[in-house]
Image 1 (tube, one colour):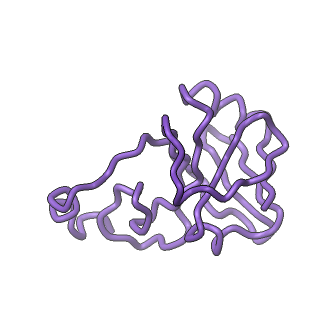
Image 2: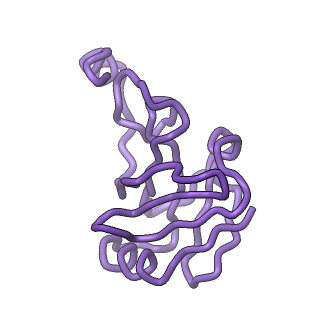
Length: 128
């Protein structure tokens, strides 16, 4: 799978991440192990770039880029990513789109957080 990472997005990612070695394109809709959302009304249309000091076997699918950044994703995410995938930085936000249109107009950058059962219970359905 290919993704075009526009120069503005490359600059933004390099300025806002410390470890560009392991960047994962992950869902942030409550379904991903990296998502900190409790409930969700955004299945498949909320994404994040997870910056990790280590690789993750669940996010081992390489996205071929036209930049010097390495970006991987997971099987769950693949079903939402279409042809003509582009990551850009526009109007102070990372924007993910494909030939069908905008997938997420505000992609977050996050650090891996493993949610405990207590954290998940506390979040419950408070979001959405």
